[in-house]
Image 1 (cartoon, one colour):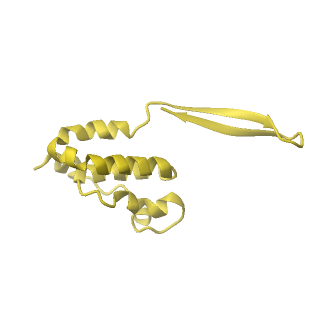
Image 2: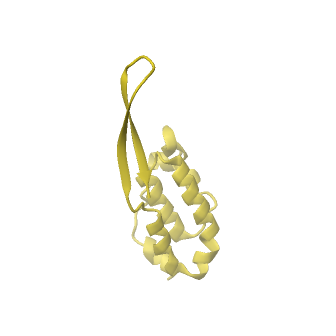
Image 3: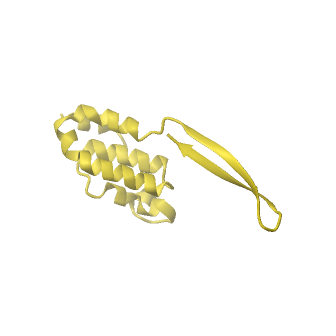
Length: 117
């Protein structure tokens, strides 16, 4: 049994049925597109987890998909590197901060800022 099959063996699909069917709204509606063109079973498992964890982060999901698609051939030859790819999909730290400001009418406003590393 291939290493990627061991990784996914016994795992239930983590993506919601609604997301997998492409129904609903927001990024979840396009969740199945993050698996298009990915034939490597281990990569599909990682992408499902990422899409479930961060359904609203379309730019991030797109970037993860592009990297996954380019790594398929490498991971077929070196499946032990799949763990490293899965770790790269998890941010090391996230910083959330507020940005208070006054608009032109003198109203106090507050926005949230994010930095993900």
